[in-house]
Length: 317
Image (cartoon, rainbow, N blue to C red; front, top):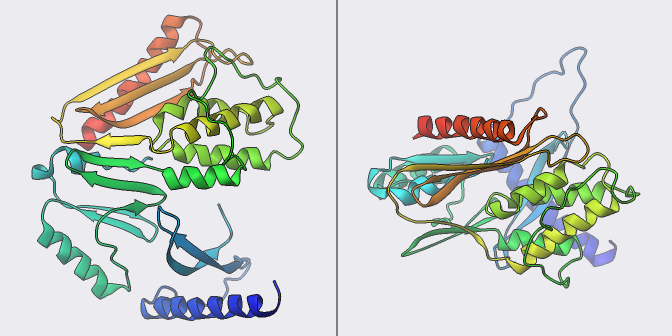
């Protein structure tokens, strides 16, 4: 970056650096202290980020202070199921906050208190949160990750790729010996990690993503082809997601197992889906920890895993 572009970037960065430093000082975020004897300092840097809206337009710019360079699913259903019985719920993820409930005056009071204590921005209605798009209409609340998926396709250079109608081939079993080892597995790992986040609103790819995750250590060309197939499937269903609508609070659970599905260690896979009324609120697809010696044993292990999750959801309710 040279000439006017470099000067513009420096001016933009210094402006937001001063603004964010002012906020940190006003809020007494940190206090200076001497370095402890025998301990190393954790390095840090400023990261300048442009946050976009779901349509791709610039929402706001921000300077982020990154310490150390280190690298569940958001449950919106309760707000939709029974608004007349809902109390105040506050969801916090780092510095992103959702305040929701059935009493507008209480919500306004909480937000006012937060504004009094901290420098915050109130975006009013919920529309975009951590890459998840939320749209409400008369039928309920719709959650999807259209923009996140579009950005993921662009990152993988698959915007113009042909779309598929299914995420994987039926009865296919991926082995660690299939294909040739990738020279640089970093792209595979980056894409699969991003696909894990997509399962927040796309449980239909959970099984395929779980299979891909089992080969993160030494991915091959065959595994990479399977990962791209999931991306092609998402391209076909970019706007698909979860729909939460008012419903009776009744707990339903379904589970399944795939006996000896792993060709390398003969372990089975378990899967479950838990519904409150007609709304899917929890799901999983994972490999069992031990080898099941029969299909019945695999089913019972899957049932035990589902029962534990149902118990947790019941205690939460």
